[in-house]
Amino acid sequence: MADEALFLLLHNEMVSGVYKSAEQGEVENGRCITKLENMGFRVGQGLIERFTRDTARFKDELDIMKFICKDFWTTVFKKQIDNLRTNHQGIYVLQDNKFRLLTQMSAGKQYLEHASKYLAFTCGLIRGGLSNLGIKSIVTAEVSSMPACKFQVMIQKL
Image 1 (cartoon, rainbow, N blue to C red):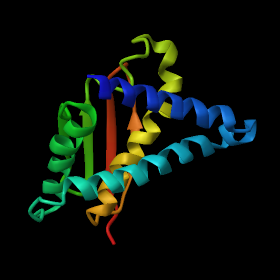
Image 2 (image 1 turned 135 degrees about the vertical axis):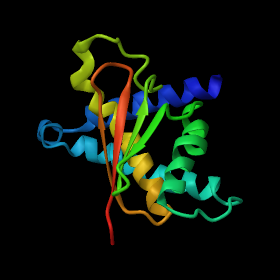
Image 3 (image 1 turned 180 degrees about the vertical axis):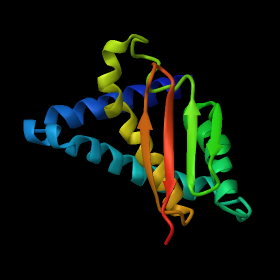
Image 4 (image 1 turned 45 degrees about the vertical axis):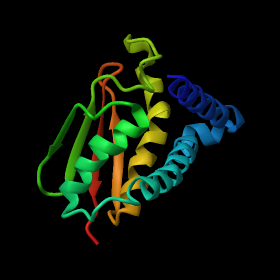
């Protein structure tokens, strides 16, 4: 429980620190989101390396996505993804109905515009993990009602 609180506090301070140190132009151009996503990318690479050390090889990309939704998500956020959907053409949607990094924010609509900065790190986390497993991807997040969110993963074919 204490490590979860520390992770939440660290994440909030990281987002706050990136935005406080940025100049006005950087915020408007989305450079802060990019910085947070790059931080998450590097962390995701390192975590996947550690988590898959003793794991058998994955059969296909669906197997990898199941690993991300179950084992990876459980280790990082203490719960599994609530729903995984795919069109079997390289697009996956991971839905978390009670995303830990958004539960501290109000469930009202007034904070929806700020949600993207709290999801950028996690988008990078997913992208970095997939990258280390040999999958190049684009990860985006959307929030329609707090604290639920969807992460869309588009696999880029090489």
